[in-house]
Length: 300
Image 1 (tube, rainbow, N blue to C red):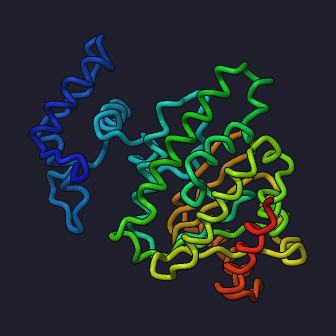
Image 2 (tube, rainbow, N blue to C red):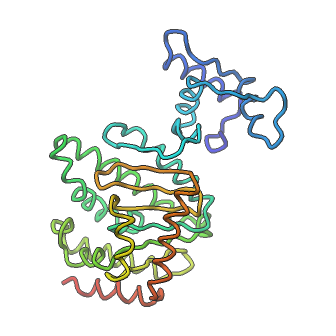
Image 3 (cartoon, rainbow, N blue to C red):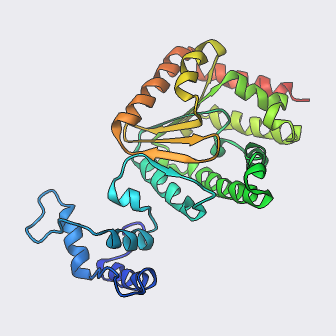
């Protein structure tokens, strides 16, 4: 409500309109201003006797639609799986929950087999997404592939826009990447084979600029082949994992599906693995910057 600028009266009016669309048979939820007040009252540390104690599935559906969030997030359900092909409209839900946890976090740890979208240039990111999801052609044709690429481009562009926002520089963003994976960008092998060397070089130059200024709170940790062995077993099913403090973790499967959880046990498990990699890496920020600049120089 705060993000959208809704007061209780406006939220109730929007719920009434949405309820008519979702439940035209008359079985819709009656979410009045008074009902919203009772729901909000339950969120207080000491809710009054008239506070809402139960919320119906119909009410959740209407509120989720009006507030532009997922039903799972509203209900606090654990371990949610999202398929971008089956539910492309839910990309906004992913962004909402990531933005919420990023704003609260002091440290975001991300491991990926590639540079995360905010650290890529827009042109490189688009080509990378096309290559990354090329197998979608087999599953559903060129149109399905285009949809997936478009969804991940929109998410990546939104994340890049937020990356250097001064309000968010208080949090530290650390990406972990295996040395073999970042070298593939410079060499133009595997999924990068079809990306022009000029785009690959510009992307790595941009990365060097981002990590050269420590005040931006962006750090890159390059994991050697030896150090990577212990992590590969934990990461085997995914191509990326993001942990926001100890309150939120998000995984992406190689198929493009995304799962997330707000259950601290899941977040702590992967945070522990990533912090262990950070301690074992041994290299300083200046060492990493030199390594990236060497990769830039190797592209001719």
